[in-house]
Length: 250
Image (cartoon, rainbow, N blue to C red; front, side, top):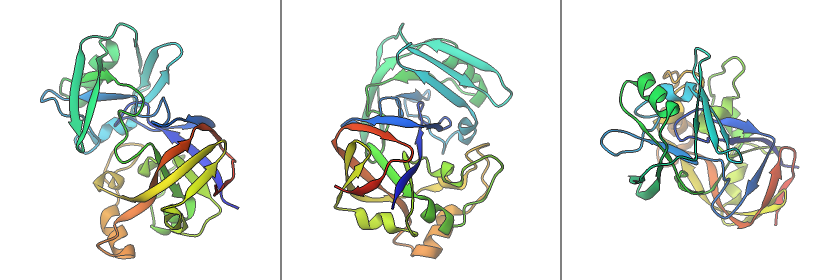
């Protein structure tokens, strides 16, 4: 029987993704997932395409305490208070309007120094940071089937940055759920479409270094018109999802 093997969120878009034992799915997604993003000097959103080494910076977001800290590869930890937010800011990424408020402080300053260009840290509302939809899902079997490079202490699925990792399936079985509703823990998710992949998957989730011709590998396995892995969904019924929960038709 399919079950949730792992839950992963990215509190700050482009920084490292982190594991959770449980999340609450609301209509706009998980409140802590991609809640903050970074703006470059030209007003564009900073992504791992532009700054792949950001994946080595690990965020710790505490919404209750209104605080954010980040840990750099050398062990340095820097924090910022999310309460003294500044002026409203707007950006567009993948055709979606991004809005939020400036978060001044040491995190933005340290990240700017790390990548070598000025970055502004922005706190947005729930749902501002996801690209395709509030729920992303991939099976452990699909990840294994595409030959992802292995790294010490790194889950092979980490480079795909998916919210739900599901065990108990054969490769690409999750694509059969497109058009169906799934019960996942307390929540009900409507699976809407397969997820097309880009060159971000070709970079190590630990260091940001390019270490795999992932797009070519997917095209070779699945055909040039099917460079996809995993699926996207929307939330029909909110609720808590935990590692170990059964995934089944609703």
